[in-house]
Image (tube, rainbow, N blue to C red; front, side):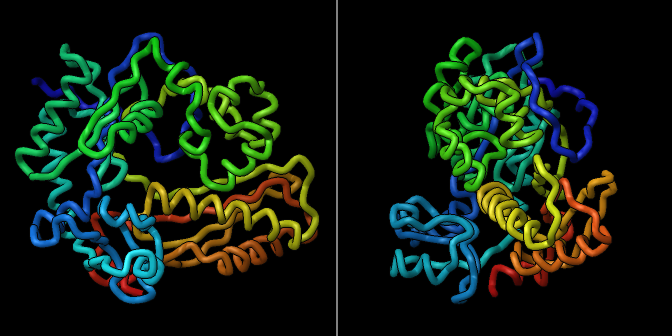
Length: 372
């Protein structure tokens, strides 16, 4: 199959979700099954069938991933190692070997490139592919990609196929492990009707709780709410929610993109007048940030924590500090530091975020965080 010349890259900023373009696209989201653990099991076949986790092997370490045998006991990524061992006393803990994982990821990306140049890696173990230019059915392309991965790496992958990135990513989780699922244009609303709101792109634990408190448990229920109501409750993100619950997403597949940061922010109906008020709101943002990081970016190494404030006169300031983890106490200190610059001005917006180290520059010293 012929490759397509890569499209124009866009910025690292999060783009608004809008209605789908007129011409239907063919997007495939490929997600490797328990990638790090699967590689380790391939290298150590004597561990097949046993519960295995990869991550910090000391009592203060955390899991980066685990296999399905371990997940049956309730183990999951970002879980402290000591807790995982309590849940599963026979859990085999293996140290991370990112050099090996990056090598395998590069091999898999070479397979993607045999079908398209429009590849957007999300992490070492997952990526979006735009195969709209190919004459073959997208489901056939996804199946062939998965077969080549299996034959050349002895690893399995799952895939989601849909007209856009949002739906494709959800679909890739539908037939895991080692399966694929397609959402066709005419099936979108039916597919989303009973989908829990926690499955929506960008909805973390705290946002899901707020949606539940509002009586919104599924995408079907969300479609009954107006865009105005959602934006009143969730700010600009309400605009995204309104479109996503209808399956609308026109984000393009961005080749060779490496996400540099992740953040969230909230604009308040009434300005905050004291740092104590700000600390209360910041706690919710940090909880959502941690949830987002744990669920989607846990393979990335944090290099900096950041707090952003917008004052009543729309002036913006930010405070940042080097860090290797999301530390609520550090965020509180950063907020207090930034708040002082307001010199008595009230605050209309608070943001919290982390910036990542480049994946190309992660070395053994930076990986020590997994052993702490």
